[in-house]
Amino acid sequence: MAGQVEFYFDYVSPMSYFGFHRVLDLQARTGCEIIWRPMFLGAVMKATGNRPPGVVEAKRNYFFVDTVRHAKRFDLPFTFNPHFPFDSRKALNITASLLEDGALIPFMKAMFHHSWGEPKNLADEAVLRDVLTGEEFCTDQFMARADATENAEIISEFTKMALEHGIFGAPSFVVGNEMYFGQDRIDFVEDALTEKSWIR
Image (cartoon, rainbow, N blue to C red):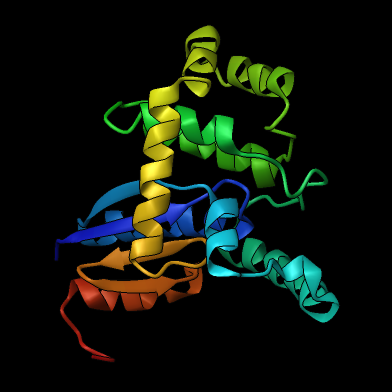
């Protein structure tokens, strides 16, 4: 089995944290190619009129419980980030600069971990610097990338692409012309790679 999967994500999304690990497992299991698409979820939500779970009390209460369930099921550390919703754009911009770099996956693992495993306020430049240093990245170089216009433009382009695919939240996956929303749709993503057809 092979094929390509576009993975649209933002570090501010706890379900993207689970989706990231699940799509890596999918890649290991199927040999598919992952096309990483960091996007700015805030802009996607605004453009589509989507509302975060936190604005609906019953949904918010369920979401807290459900994220803990997922963390236990996937054996991942999880603590709800007290700074949520934090501005992830500096971390996203660095990600954009690493798309063709071997440091991409280690960096993404670190950013997701420090968003939801051992949560920190990644919007705070001093905190982000400390995280980069602690994870043994090139702190000054990466911080320069965080503020680079060309990297912000990549994120803007991926965000636009997400909207063109009909994406309204994170994580989302695209296989061919089909979009799948949510880390719990990874089975359908795998089916799409095998050319199984559920809804056409």
